[in-house]
Image (cartoon, rainbow, N blue to C red; front, top):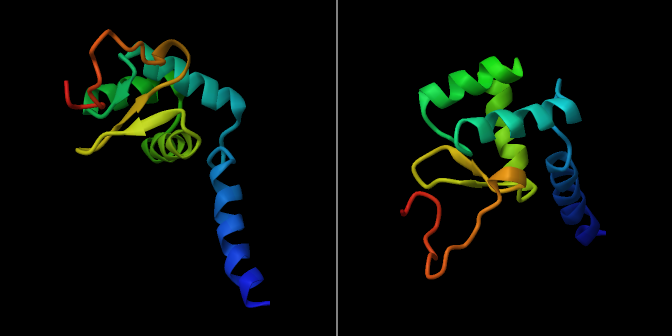
Length: 106
């Protein structure tokens, strides 16, 4: 019984990561992807956040939650110094020959 008690909270957290942030839907997720792509696939500076807020209609908190959701689902990568890079759709990385740098190392 102890094993089940330890596993259930982990399953609940995993399930929570698979859902878009509260108050958003799949259209908001698609709008986020398009807006982040329009600012160069990275979301880390004030000007990038403002542009994405304007394009999506999401609040800063919702953008941060959506970014966390995208990172949890493998659709984005977190920069060490803050912010995220979208890595799906038009932002999917194309590996140039010999380029093995991680986000933020270029």
